[in-house]
Image (tube, rainbow, N blue to C red; front, side, top):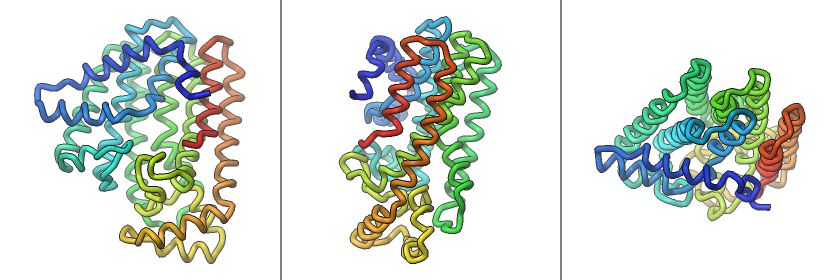
Amino acid sequence: MKLKMMYSFLNSDLNIVEKELEETIQAKSPLLRQASLHLLQAGGKRIRPVFVLLAGKFGNYDINIIKNVAVALELLHSATLVHDDVIDDAQIRRGKPTIKAKWDNRIAMYTGDYILARSLELMTKIENPLAHKILSHTIVEVCIGEIEQIKDKYRFNQNLRDYFRRIKRKTALLIAASCQLGAIAAGVDEEIHKKLFRFGYFVGMSFQITDDVLDFTGTEKELGKPAGGDLLQGNITLPVLFAMKDENIRKKIERVHENMGQEELKELLSIIKNSGAIERSLAVSDRYLEKALAILKELPDNRAKKALRDIAKFIGKRKF
């Protein structure tokens, strides 16, 4: 089953979210508007808005309220992508030129800032102070995670704890916040929204580990960027950490640099794929997935719960 089929009952509401996304990033500056739309129209899975809406189904679901959270979380995610592309000097995002490639770094940074500001502005429509506290904490942690990623580039002596802490901040917390904030906007009990947070956290960890695996196993067409790009940029992911347990492979990996030739990189990717590191990484992803599904069993039964279960399984096992 395709991912979108798992939550097809949300289609009309997701169309509202999509329209709201486009309206929210309209700016008086034609350049800001054009750059923001360029990113938005490049597509994306819209996983965070989906989690927001599904979590809202556990409470008093009102699309006119909950759409503000869904759009805000997607805009926050989008802003981090724009800034990421500047830091990584990325030319391609989702198969299309990045904002920094199409314009320049300054335009990209201001566009990211503008999108973030619009996200925060939308969240003011949610009057619950707890929602703002959670969002603020999430933004702080995401920023720390991005700084840690820069600091850890080409640092081959890092350990598993460094990696897990980094992906928690970089990915998992934003997905967890999407689940929790969607539930809070729908007025659910504290016990439920805390469980939804933990569900989102474990799914987010599995999601990022699978993403890191796909960077080795996917094609450029599937990834929308060259395979092995993370390693080339010095991002030490779980498959790399596992592969480096072999001293001979470690020596080869430690020679990686940003100007490494494609043939040499391709050979190294093959070595990592044949080292057992991919299988070990996917096993860790599975354990996070099992934790997420265990929490889901504690939640009330409804259509959204089944969709969350299907999406979680899909995310952990995806091959695209």
